[in-house]
Amino acid sequence: MNKFDRQSSSADMQALPDDIAEELSRLPSEVISVDDAPSIAPPVPLSQDEVRTIVISLMLTMFLAALDQTIVATALPTIGRQFQDVSSLSWVITAYLLASTAVAPVFGTLSDIYGRKAMIITSLSLFVAGSVLCAIAPNMPMLILARGLQGLGGGGIMPVVQTVISDVVSPRERGQYQAYFSSVWMVGGILGPVIGGVFAEHLHWSMIFWINLPLAAAAIALLLPRMKKIPVFHRKRKVDWLGGVLLMASAVVFMLVLTWGGTRYPWLSPTVLAMVGGAVALVVTFVWHARRADEPFLPLPLLGGSVVPFGLMAGGCALGAITGLTVQLPLYYESVYHLSASEAGLALIPLAAVSTCGAAIAGRTMARAKHYKRVAIIGTSWAALCGLGLTLTTLPLWGLLTLMAAFALGLGTTFPVCVVSVQNSVARPQIGTITGALNFFRSLMSSFTVAAFAAILLIALGADIPLGEHHAAVSTIPADDMRHAFRYVFGAATALMTGAALCLIAMEERPLAGPSAKQPVEMAE
Image 1 (cartoon, rainbow, N blue to C red):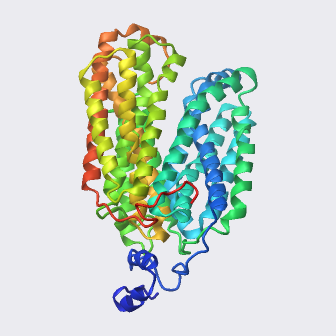
Image 2 (cartoon, one colour):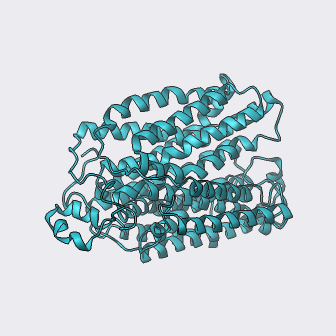
Image 3 (cartoon, rainbow, N blue to C red):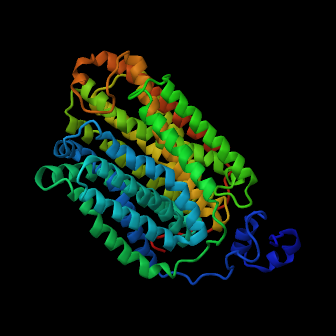
């Protein structure tokens, strides 16, 4: 196969338009060949209405995945009573998380090989099929298997949607759209528990799955007619299935360690240690295979450089901090401030809502500022200071919620900057792969942080309590002990945000293609 040679084609590069020459300059010679490289002909521009329709359909598609992360939790007691199986209820959540995390890099890479349209149809089809099987499941084992199938589809939605946005919108404008999708996750996170509770109490728990069908149908009806106008950047090549299987297997085992460690099995139990050894062996085998494969599933050089590793780490730290706090804070609210379970849930809204405002500020700044990463550096540094305040002070509820909102505002600036910077650092035919890797790493980081925060609390409290769940044991923990224990949790969140700020400082700030920084950018332009 003849490889693309930059040196021998320098004259041809100079004859190309600047934006196309910039794209070709990013193509690694070991990845793209002359025969199967994407066409360099400029795509036909999408109209404002077409872009708006595509964005709305993608937001609706992502809303499916966001809603399904939270809508099931409040219906679990009802499901357990019907199937008379309470011990397996956690697997209804775990099966989805395992599957969705493991397939994120798979769908990202396959979208670079087979195209965005094929993968968005595949992910939605798996999601809908899983939803139907969940709704008609006759027993708990079938429900758990169906949730795993649903997770395969849900895990593909996020990276493919973000990749489609990268095909439609220039990097400079893209930050705004990432903020819009952050708001979708915020709305889904707030509405999910409410809708799930209403369906389970007043209708039937299966409605939490049936509702996905009309939403998916609407998303497909809006998106598919316009997919043919979206620029094509995928490249057909041989699929490294062995590499993909090794990557998914290592993720599943690692996620099981984080799920079972400290709860079902002690951290130093033979079972957990054996699983850790198995995960490490799978990762080593994956790396060994990727170094020797002609076209590896996830090219390891793609994860290097001066942008990608820092962007992955900064985004992982930020998402891990907010996820870990979201899971553990209800325990703090109930024990220290004596809130009910529903009131503790409402107290989480500032954390989710204000982080979306931070993402929107960063997105707008990216569309106008030359030094776009400064807003995220300032935001993460501000979040670290707020976290330090939470660690060192004891506040009334209103003061805690105010400082938590300020923390979330700074944290939210990280997400659009990291996603766009990472996508902007690779060639177009690799954006799906790197976006899948980004989501994969962030999911693993979130799971790790949840487990780490729980371990910190258990060590600080010196008690074996089911953290993160509503339980009677909360009332037995003295408020002063809980305040003392959570200072370590807030300290860990502060350390994560400090790490995110340092990674953003170290990350190279590459110019973003798109409208002039002085030119206002509208949402659907």
